[in-house]
Length: 239
Image 1 (cartoon, rainbow, N blue to C red):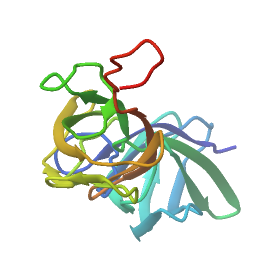
Image 2: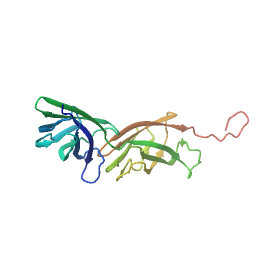
Image 3: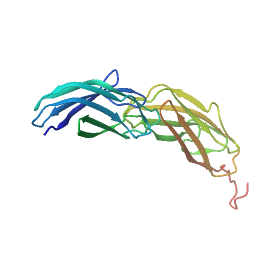
Image 4: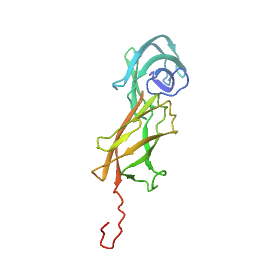
């Protein structure tokens, strides 16, 4: 009885073998006839039910002969595209069917997708030019230091950090900055000048929005507001 076994596979994105977000991927296969009779006239069909994969070349017909105990290479005949909105290490499931006469052999490949993943490592108040207590105090000009890290497996592309705060008395010299690629495992740091006026509440939410070509991050962080310091001159707390 013939039996066509999928020995191995490889991928190619035009530069290397990684399967990355937004890539067009060529899929190569190596089969072995581990049965005891020859196999001929085989149709190979590739399909995928994952919504973030589009197959542009899904079939090949092999009209030759695969002798028993011999191998067949199918080099890069299958082509699929990975969407640009996939999370890092999402698994794609490629189903490959080989048909020859009354025989059908089916294999499923599970391949992780590399994508960027941005996280805010730090969002710290620098008021070293004021009273250096690391708190937003009224009537200060401080710096909000933001550090991003790409914890994914692929570089980000051309991103933006934007800040927003609806609290009266809080304003920024500039609430937006751009960044280029952040490679996997690397950081990007940016400083925002923040002005603190008369603020009626003791906790201030600052909305941090990070966007780029492949992923985004939308986070609200909360910062304490210090109270104005009084200069008490008498023992009964009267000025």
